[in-house]
Every structure is written in structure tokens, then in C-alpha cells.
Image 1 (cartoon, rainbow, N blue to C red):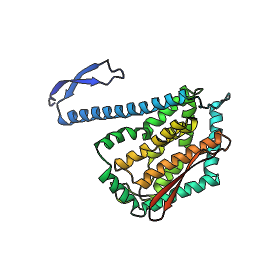
Image 2: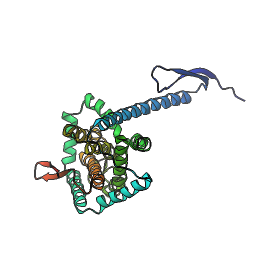
Image 3: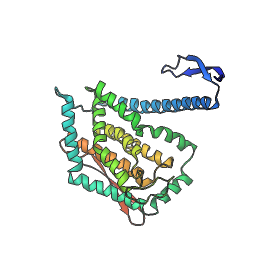
Image 4: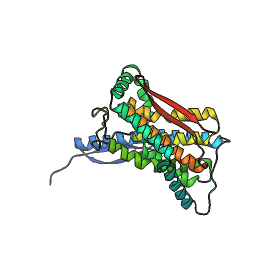
Amino acid sequence: MPRVPVLFYIRPVVSLYPQQHSLSLGLLPLTHEKLYGDCAIMAQAQEMGKKIGATLWFFLILCMFISVSDGSSSIAGDDFPLKSDLLKIKSDYSEFYLNGNNLFLLGLGIGVNGISANTHLDRNIQNAYSDHVKSSVTDDLSTWAKQPGEGLYTIPALLGGYIFLRDTPVGDWSQRSLRALAVGGPTTLFLQRAIGSDSPTEGGSGWKPFQSVNAVSGHAFVGSVPFITAAQMLDNIGLKIVLYGVSVLPAASRINDNQHYFSQAFLGWYMGLLSCNAVFRTDHNDKETISVYPVPMAGKGLGVIVTKSF
């Protein structure tokens, strides 16, 4: 039986408490593959820890905004909260898929995506951003800005708020955000494949139905929902403006990282807005909130009309 050389190794164990450190001692076969693999695993763990930490910071800040706002509104539950929430999701679906105005806005958003994707507009925006805006500073900001769009962390965080803080404004915010994701998620997934355009690293953004899955940015969709939901729950106009602005950052990070074209990042964010508006109408007896209408400008790119009904 051949002898396998071994060495003693010391591996640091990541702790949630910064002041506590621990070490583990073990035996490791002296092979390059194992050594390199172990280092790769540790690097992946550290990267995941950074993502989780960044996501938690975003949600802690949002929770602070929502908790201290006098304008936050919680919906009274009944003896069967899950049943009540499922009925709300049913109403959300009606507001999204059976509401004529919402369907018109959805079609308008897809049309804007088509104009930008099937002309030189997407590539021109990408090149202009890369030449005149992108820098090490935007790369650092993008690393943080994309974290709310990581569904692996955002959705469990929202579920935690929904389950453990249900009777608080934070629990209400979590519930509304999850409902918006549930309403817009199926259409977002379908459009990703149905439109079928490539990412900047794969090719052009022109429509190629069912040939690719990058036509709508999932990061932009998931990352926008918690911030738009929070903005709709607050009465303070200043905070509303800030949160609506921050909701765009996950989409912008995908353009910065060359992972999506403008048309794809825009449609992901826009799906988040329409989904949140559907949830808002369910909870507020069909009253409208802030709506964004993208408008193609002949020879001048895209314009945006922002409206608010009272």
C-alpha cells in the first residue's frame, strides 16, 4: 500500500463575532490539488460572507427607515394570516395581469426594451458608460449595489422579517416585498427566455426569442422591489425620493459590471415597479401611487414621465 505524505495544517474558522477567533488542526494529504481546492473553498466562503454582510446592511438600513416613519402603515391580520396573505396575492395577480392600465404599461416597457435592444442604442449606452463613467470607484460601488439583487440572500432575509416580525412595520414591508416578487417573478422569468437577447459578454442585445436568458435583469428586478416597497410605505417625500433612487442602483450595477445592457437592466427594474404598484393597489383600494412611463423620443433616445395620483 503506497504511503501518502501528510502535513499538519491550521485553518481559521470564520466567526460571526469579530473579537472571537478559533483554529482547527487536522491532517491533510500533501497534494497540490487538495491544497489549491482548500484555498478556493475558503476564498468562496469569504466572498459569500461579504455578500451576506452587504445584504444585511442594506436591510438593516431599510428597517430603520421603515420603523421610525410615522407614515408607515401596517395591515391588520386575522386569525389565519397565511390564508389572508394568499388571498392578497390572488388580488395582486388580478391587479397585475387583469388590470388594463397595468397591461398597457407592461407592453410599453417591453416596447422600450425592444427599441433599445434592436437598435444601436444599447451598444452606444454601454460604450459611453465604459468610456466616460466606469472607474474603480464605480466598480467598488457596484459590488455593494448589486447585493440586494442576490435572491439567495434577499428572499431569505424577507422571509425572516415576514415570519419573525410580522406584526411590525418591518414585517409588513417584508410581506409586501415578497408578494411583489411572487407577482412579477413568473413574467420576469418568461420574458428572460421569450425575448432571448444576449448579455454584453455574449453578443448583441437584439431579440432572439428563446435562444438566451439575459433579456431581463433578475438582479434589477429582485433588488428594486424592497426599496420601491419601502418608498411606497413612507409619507416623507424626501425619503421616498431617496429610496426610489436607490432602487435603480442594482440595475445600474449590472450595466457597470458589463453583465446586462441598458434595455435589460431597465426592464428588470420596471418589472419591479409594476409589481410593487400592483401590491400597493391591492392594499389601498385601487388608489394609484407613483408611476413611471418610459417614452421613446424620436432621434433623442428615451424620455421618462413620472406621475402621481392623489
